[in-house]
Image (cartoon, rainbow over all chains, first blue to last red; front, side):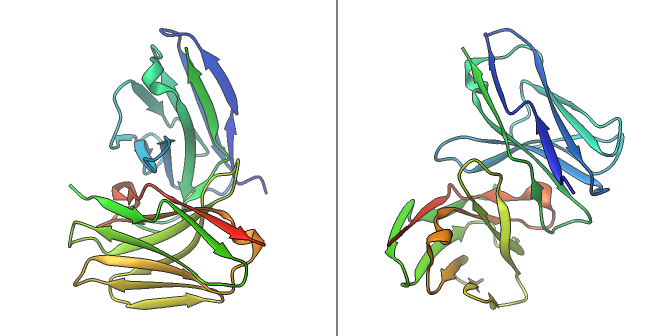
Length: 113
Length: 112
């Protein structure tokens, strides 16, 4: 059982480039989340989804877009990367809400030059 | 909005001793308080959580206490072992996981 898988694990971008991070979960979870983790700041929610076809903004959504076309996948896009988006990105999923255990992927380290 | 402060940022204890990490929150409506452990190169993993209708919860060597009046909650780890070395995060929510506000993390170092 793979759980939550994120790809790619590492990526270096130049300012202005675009990219997509893919999150896949095999636990049939309804809820999925994208977080960013920066030193000394804990985790901050970017976007989340409460089910297939739905998305909503979190605490820090600017500069990011998401899509949840399939229940098992949650994509995070950066249309025009900026150095401020250099961070480690974590995807998480949860089976039933509204609160409960979050299952995290291993993270994707993004550097924007 | 909600704010969660976590202390200390780094904690070094001798193997076998106890470790305590404290968090305070600002929104009195918060009612769900999880603790996550993050090992190097991994994503966070839930180790224990508590809801506002409970004052204390234990799971083997780990316990969490909640003081709603003072708006703080603490993680207690007894008989620490080398595998307890990690970064620990507290969080607080007033109803949904998407409302979770996270502390900045505590790096726990277990000295042999």
